[in-house]
Amino acid sequence: MAAKEETGCPSGFYYVYLLNTFDAKTYKTGGYGKLPWYTGPKRYGTPIPPFPSDLFLVTENTKYEYDIRSGSSYFYVLSEKFASIISEYKTNFIQISPVKYIDKNGDGVLGKSYFVGRTKPLKKEEVFDLHASKFVNESNYDFELLKIKNEFNFDLFDTRYTAPIQFSLIISEKMKAHLEREGIKGVDFLDLDLLKLNKDQSTSNEKPTYDPI
Image (cartoon, rainbow, N blue to C red; front, side, top):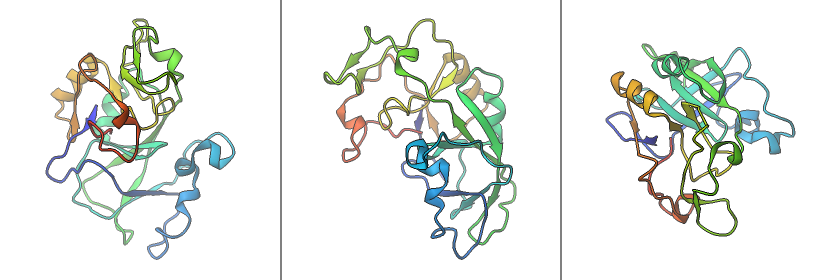
């Protein structure tokens, strides 16, 4: 899956703030970057804890329309429709929680319901056929061609913990067909067998061959 730019649905850098409290004057400067779903387990010092019961998702553009976007390296923002669909499939999402979707003044955005989700880290040895795949170099970290193990049976998963910038969410043909039937917005589907990854996809100072979700 790749981010697709549509009217009201930008690709590239996506700006929202996921907070456990909200103050209109300080939400940008109040240290939100120290929250565990922004820092990640290494900087936070412990595994990322479950989302709390009360969460605020602050958007500065209430006209945005999307079904799935990455909010940081450690959480996704999901529309109600997307969250409902993936609940029918095997995925590596371990928690999906509702949020209060508000604008920068703290007012609820009418007609839009969103959730946030986090995934369980997957080891590359669990997912990929390392003999059939091709690596960019001898580090065996960045892939050029990717092959998934035949016995791996998830319908949706991410690999951000093994190649943080190179990959996006990966889905099965079955789920792809379902998402297309439902008219999921802001997403392109790229055939993994035809997608050639390269070093540009794993370096932040080069334009990638696609925009990950």
